[in-house]
Structures are given as C-alpha cells and as structure tokens.
Image 1 (cartoon, one colour):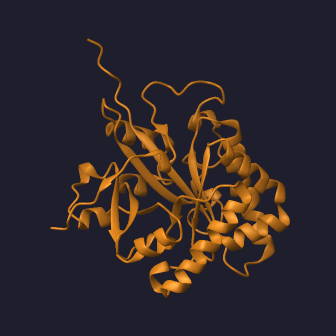
Image 2 (tube, rainbow, N blue to C red):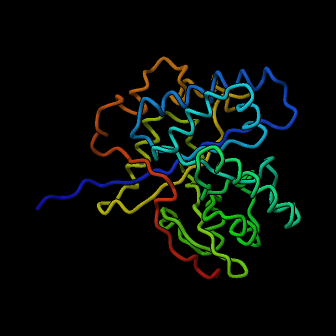
Length: 278
C-alpha cells in the first residue's frame, strides 16, 4: 500500500504601506528595494500564489509615479496568482473608528481595487491586526468575506493549538465573516530565520490528508526598520541576498519538489464555525 506524502499549504499575505504625506524619495526607494522585486519574482514563478495588500496612500503614489507597476499587479490578479486585499483606505485601526467611518474607508478601498482589476476584493486587511468583536458587521457590510487575525484570538476562543491550521467563521448581528489565524511559529520565523528552516517547520506539521493550512501575514521587507532589505537578506528572503531565487521558489518552470508546501489564495480555502468560548 502506497503511503501518501504528507502535505501542507501556505497562505501568505504581504502588506505594503506608506503613510499619508511620506517623503517622495522614501516611496521610490522602498519601491526599488521591495515592491518591484517582489512582483518580478512572482512573474517568474507562476506557481507561487500570494495575497498582496497595498494601502490607499501607496496606491495613489503608484498610480501617479509607477502606473506600469499597477498594470503588472493587475495582470497577476487576473490570472489568479495574486489576490489583492482591501481594508481601511488610510490604514486606520478600524476598532477605533465610528461605524460610519469604518464603512467609508472599507468601501473606498474596495472601489479602488475593483476599478483596478474588475473584481471586488474578498479579503480585508486589519491594520496592526487589531480585532474587536463588532468588526464582522462593518467588514461584511462593506462587501468583504474574510480577514486575518493573530492566532491568540483563536486560542482565547478555546481552539486548541493543533486546530489552528484552518479557517473559522465568526459573526456579529447576523453578519458572518471568515477568519484566518496566523500561525505562531511562522510569525517568529518569517523573515528572521532561513527559508529552509521555515520549510522544515511546515513539513513538520504536514499531514497525509493535506488538510492543514498555515496562514502568515507580514509587512514587506524593504522599508526602514528591522524588516528592511539588509536585515533579511542573509535569511534568503530578500532578492538582494547572494542566493539565487531557486533557493526560495524553485526554477520558474520546474514542478514543486516532493514534500514542499503548496501556496494557495485564502479565498480558495474552506472554513468552519468558531467554537463557543469556554
């Protein structure tokens, strides 16, 4: 009897943000070091699927200064390789806003992305991943179907750690929302550990049924601060490292090696109701 190879899937969301009023050269510098190299890698490796989030101020700058870049992002979205996330237009902490303001920002971002790709976003990025139990009403009323939270919220709801490798649904006032919890191990490994260690971590949690989904949401590496390009190059996450891109994603046309995790878009994943808190 043939024993199936254990499998696991990875849903990776990458957040890209520049605040209102930031200096123009900062936009351009981070574009050259982070935003453009990532899209180039995705274009070369069509088998890698990710979710991308660009905040409103950054989309405005890209539309004005790098319009061809948005065309490339749209092409990746249209072919199903990239899923664009919506959220609050100006990257607000939604829980701190009045309901009317929440809706206005969420709807504006949905409108912008629909104009760009022809499709309204299903996923909603939460600034700083700040969760509040009334958010499903606002997010669902704005047309979104899912969001990403830290797995601490699943743990607080009584979900055992071994069951965090999935998606759940929650609701408020009859509005249902799917939530994906980021996996704690990945939060501490990406982008601080070698890519190979991350793959080994995923393999260690693979199952013969291949029914586990690891979710990870992280800011792009390229701007000022601890997640800048220089800080992650040595771990193999940055295109500026000495390693070839094959270390991270394989050759552009080769099949995924046996035992490697597959990547998927969150909207394609299944979910189950969240348990009643204990």
